[in-house]
Length: 374
Ligand SMILES: [Zn+2]
Image (cartoon, rainbow, N blue to C red):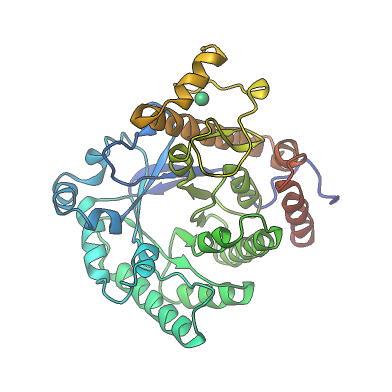
């Protein structure tokens, strides 16, 4: 076990940053949102949400695209002061083999006209099986796109460059090149998701991700330690806590909605658990004896009623699970904020992850790592 004191926040920090003339309170959990008819909008019931939308998603639907360009994204999503970011969708383009086809100026135009708060630069994820040649070409294109966004994003919208790299050296080198392009208030690290998907049970993959997050944070602190660091696709909010310790300010996950689709509900300190045998995902069932939730769906109801609501099929059940999951994610972030205020994020992480079958080892790795660089 590491010697790092419980009375420590690692690299985590609580702050308020002016973003697009709004107050952006961090740390935050951004809920990834895609425009589907039945997807619920948790920010209408849960305070302090922030939202990550996706240009690829919007550009697939001409009517939606026009509406968003005319009315703005905040009105379309019925946001009320919440920070809304727009990812380029580079990952989706690449996955469909359309990487070279997309015009970065089209993404920038959409981001400008929809009046998002944070415009993510069009980036190309580096997948493990890419040749060195392809990697260099995509890296150059990503850097060119950062220059384009820096030039063309208007009206005080913040530009978010996204770092890519399979190793800490690659992260450092990418970061040095981005530094030359401009000053940015918020930086992202991308490309962590596909690696997590390849082997969801490997600790070593997480070790490498933690290493890269710490590397990026150390690099940013050399410029200004108020610069925000956003992590794309953290999967579980429990993993997110470790990224906060490592220096992330904003973390983002689509799993609140993906889990809901697969009949999984999130339990604090435990993770995603299945609520019905309808899921094809092999995972253990909800621990009802440890179930304790005050979300807008579960609040004050008997466990048997909650179970029925969560098990329900069709859109109703899906929406119940998604709202519940979003609430639990936000609640974990609220607790993290409180802990940071009291300078005891390490203690909170030990409490939540110290007995977790999977995350225990990654927590220990993170704490050892922090001990060596704080
Ligand atoms: Zn609930």
